[in-house]
Amino acid sequence: QVQLMESGGGLVQVGGSLRLSCAASRSIFSISLNDMGWYRQAPGKPRESVAVITRGGSTNYADSVKGRFTISRDNAKSTVYLQTNSLKSEDTAVYYCYMTTNVNVYWGQGTQVTVSS
Image (cartoon, rainbow, N blue to C red; front, side, top):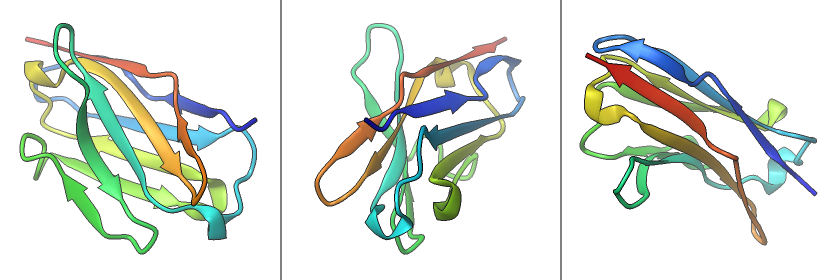
């Protein structure tokens, strides 16, 4: 059973930065990996897609984070990253990573990001 382990969340002031990481508990053959990405869920709000990166390296971002967040991946390490800059109070949420193969979608347990003003 593959598990995704997230790290890097925490408490930061408005304008600060955090780097979130998400690594698979065991190696997933890089040839099997397709999209990787991040969702987030704030209290009382539905889960929303934040960023996605394809196997070929193409990226897509929610309008609310464009220009501030950067997603990247390391297939050899089965790891996906989310660099968050210029954080705003509305970025406060639990952030969930995911990885997809042709047959499965794997989810992380979530990491809390709290942005204080």
